[in-house]
Length: 555
Image (tube, rainbow, N blue to C red; front, side):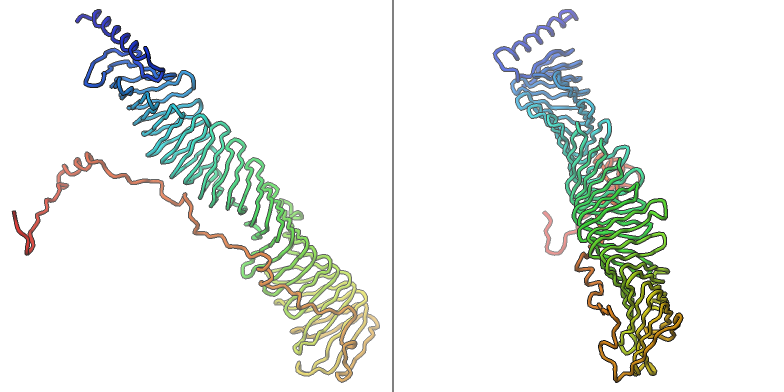
């Protein structure tokens, strides 16, 4: 057959086949538009060269195809391309099978699925044009203008612009890398939602982890973590529900909030909290707790509300606490209505009926400030209605009061006490620290007392002190008490009280993290590779000889 006759024959064949495919049938019939060569076969037609087929709103291109007319399906080979003329969706692959009845396209090897700015790469894709859902398995990669997402399996719901990634999910964009087991990504608003364990590392090296999933807006750069932790070089923030705005460097936590300042070694806990990273300013409220770490000791403090500020200026580095203040340390305890802790000089100011205990002493005043040096109480200053009580070796209560007091401590115990203004002192005279002789009561404008083990060893008084000694047999409650005396040891806080207020659950340093798992996967060699290796010298298979055991018979 000459060339001209062949072209006429091919044209008529296509025309007849096209007419037969469309006449008297609905538009679900798969049609042949063109091909360089058409060959008949058993139950199918073979199309060769520049093949173009059509099904509803889709055009199908490939190098060659098997067309099963009665079954309304085709097998497509080489440079396969399925293009939707109504929607901006194009799919390419090396091989595909297309069913015109179910509108299901099965694409294999080098599959590229494109929908506007979103492109999916995989080797195994099933695309249902009826539901407009593409499903991939055995690894896939989705790329848009902002992100690259990979996973072992995935479902792309085109109408909803939603992609669900499952198993070994990795999301990479210019600002961070995320790993999780299940992720739902909306391509239009560019938001992602994860289920279960989620781990993130930012480009600066910060980590963001969630045990119960997360939500992230990739354009607004806002995270929401559930049972989450955000850790930077300077801080660590944790909460059962944690919101983080990367642009504003702002955190907000709900339920079991904790904020750690690594430089200051101060950790704050509470029911709810807010933290501004740039300002280093935090607000925590609801059964709040402070844990200040020292090298050999830890200071605990409870409050209803806590405000922490750690700016660049030393004078602006402080911690404020309001209502229900209780603090305890190995050698220190105190209560107050409000408190200010200055980081610059390690001073703690207590307001509104503060009381502080230190081993054998109790001090109180309208307000007081004490200083910690080398992790121990160094000195204390008390203003207005200052009152100090020290117990001696016989548990007697030595008492001092005045307008202001300054106490100095050594190795955790009070060593000297200076009283200025309306000073009064009442102390028990002892014989060999084993027998009470009487009570000394002295009034003086200024008094300086020196102590040893809670007992007064030396007293210096101002001009014209007024003193009185009462022998032990005449001591009664009135004689043994200064006005305003209150021994409030029952109110002294301890660790049990702190734990009853809030007992932090420690963070597990060995918690599962997907970034700790190796990225390299070992793949089994193919049979061809095994045969090639076995064909090399020295790698021949060893033929085993079966030796029949006793009782076996050869046939």
